[in-house]
Length: 342
Image (cartoon, rainbow, N blue to C red):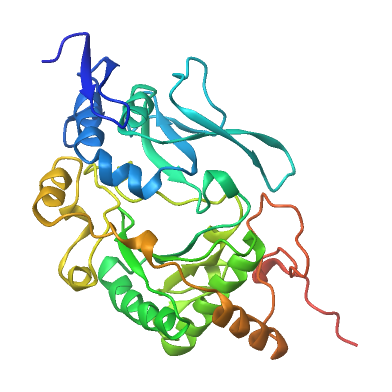
């Protein structure tokens, strides 16, 4: 067993850093026995790709003090004791409240966050130098009860074609659970409301092509056994697990970037804290060149305006948001008041 505390030597842009890991033998994933030290070693092993994927962005930390079967909380404010080399950036939230958030610039920052019991890393879709204008379009394909990863696969392939028709190049990854995340790099020219509208436009087009298998229905009672396109993950301060981030699943799975020719031949359980370093070493980073292909939202926003003109406008925001312009009533259909008959 590991000693009470240990130190990892972590390479970085300014040379090696010696990073302390306390309680290294603490088990984070009880069902598979993955320890805190293994998690720290994982983020070092994949550090270059991990930082390329989620670095230079505000990041929220999902922290588990007693392992993934215990209580967790989201940490958005920089905690006390932050190392000087870990950067901060000021961020304004939907409530209009502002405070700094952490930014990852090197693998040693990941190790420090693991030391703070972080399991899941949630980066914003915007860069630290321009937090108000996303440079990533993110679409979450979420299979509903009765469906699973295999049901998300054909939706992901069709979504790729939708985005191609809109002039965007798509990049898939496992969610680390049952779903698939599809990202497209975009030029940071639009605010969060416009980017969310672009996501809704793509989601509606996908739904039109696969109505029996895909839904944009916000209310669960209307989704059935379909794959939900979660458009609200594009709302400001809504984040999904970053590429290469571990997940709080029983098997210590990882949200794994894929090549498109891999999507139909893998399962989420193939990618874990223990397996991903070897896979990455063997075949390289599937997302290495993603930032080189930023596209425009012009076509998707034209589709949005077309849908608005035909009566398909704004959709509900998450329940913790202030009322947004043009938003319909935020009440599930079965609880909505019925019109009184004459």
